[in-house]
Image (cartoon, rainbow, N blue to C red; front, side, top):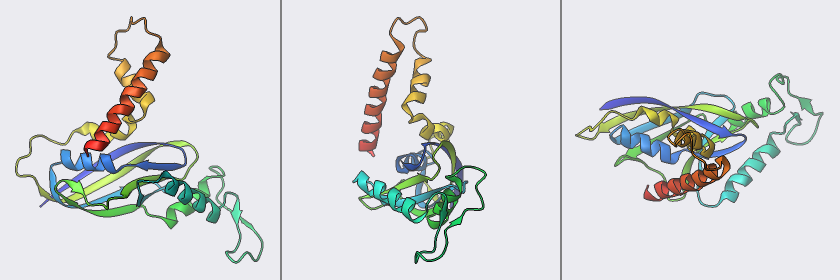
Length: 212
């Protein structure tokens, strides 16, 4: 039995969901974990982890709208509707901060999952989501702790660049990375180059997700 620890960095784009399932599976494969258990946890108090449907995007929209309905921005009243509205005492970090803490408390900060054949075990329509509860873009740290049996032959150490994989799925960041390799004296218009790169990157992501 072996233990493996790693930290992923995920850039969120404000309130909403980021599917981190492909990156966890990739980390498992690169870590050569064949079978075992993985614990996924966030190091924050204003975002959370959930497992939910990966097919109809309206499910995520409904989840977001429902959470906003039960945890309003400026304050709250009794669930019965009786009594006066109470404003949040913690308000120094913005109107969305205290609601984000409550939404995190109502969901999960960590998830434990089984791993078999170097892949996390999920249902057909399930995915692991990082749920950002703040309105601003944030860099979120996700801790991965796996324990189990490794493949008999370990070809190489886990790729350390996995820490930045979620960051690099942002097309604008990938544009910068790829553009550095281009001829600095290229006469192509920068906007056209970025657009072409966006299309190429989106296609690569689509192919990778299908291969998984």
